[in-house]
Image 1: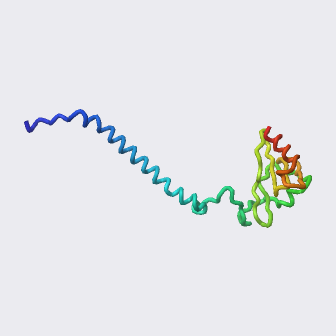
Image 2: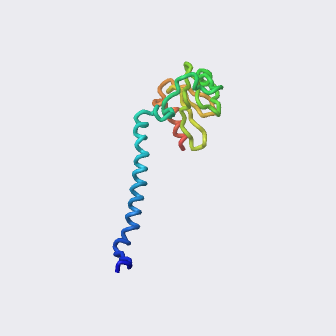
Image 3: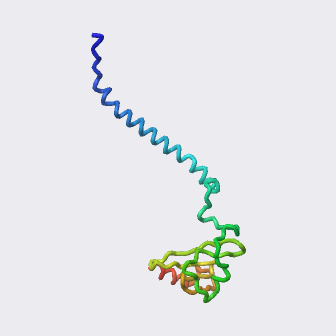
Length: 145
């Protein structure tokens, strides 16, 4: 009976697709884990990622967008904060917008731990740290309400 094909045991057929699926899953997982390997290096050195850290302040005059106002021109008592305020220039460096999004859609913006106001509103000046200023605390509560 050399011409007759041998019957294949049923257990071999049942395991075939499972083994193929398991092998495919292993390849996918190894590929995904391999892709994560570079992330640890980039996390250890944010400069290696090619983009600046979002919390890192800009420090070179070349990075200051055209038309960015001087901080002294914006952050003086009674001056109106531009609605489009995104930051200002101090000592040739960009000071990025430090704001809190309000429930009304406005932004409560702070500067130098003494100045605050909403975009489109007047600058208010505190004689103490904003953390200790009751009026600023009231503004924050109103903003979040």
